[in-house]
Image (cartoon, rainbow, N blue to C red; front, side):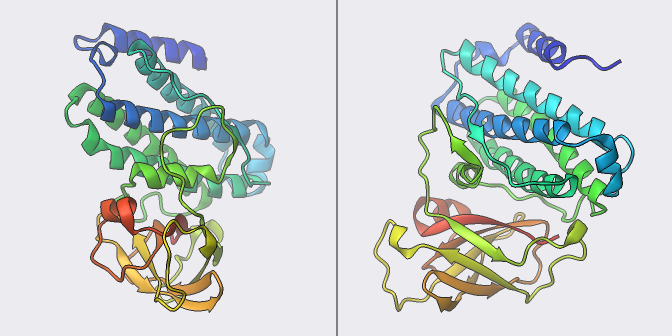
Length: 314
């Protein structure tokens, strides 16, 4: 028998409240609060996405596109679990006197079960990256860190199931890719129509990937050397950039240092770079004037002109 979302959420919150050192009874640091608010912002986004994937299509529609029996039921279960994640984080914030960031109004560009799952893979990858990137900020709160890790592993199970449903590898790379809070928050903005409360995180100029699109069923992987076409608006840069200066795409993937590729400019605010060797799953790309030598923290702090854009490689 499947418990309702409300019952599961209440049960989990009761366990948290009864723990010997409950999260909700520990004072939250500013870092704790920032990580939790961003996590909630992303959980709200994912909860709405998966709810739409559950109710927009029937089991027959999923089956007709090649998904296994019961796939829709599991999409609905993922939606319930995302709601539990959001309710748990909200409770922790409220019990510490912090107003949780509310749900926004979202628009998701999918029109079929397959396009929904493709999009869910991309958005869930951002959530996984945000939890990984936020982990170092929780090192002074071991209970909170463990709880965040428990959500992270559940998110990874969701993504593996989605990828398997597409016929792709559930685990295309040996490592997932950590994301800074700024980059994760900016990637979420493309789906936000209106939000009654935004987080105090800078919104960067957009960088858009125009080609290629992810391969069908994420197979075969986009091969190294394939041109990636990006577009951006130079008038939105926060700094003045010499129009004759070379520009680069820094690509963040797994635990590797960012890979920098010089753009071949094809017009105002557009250019191409090749897919580098050794990358896989999803790559997060930013536009920069730096030719190399920066890590993700430095790209986040001062090295990014626009971005990030998410590139699905495999």
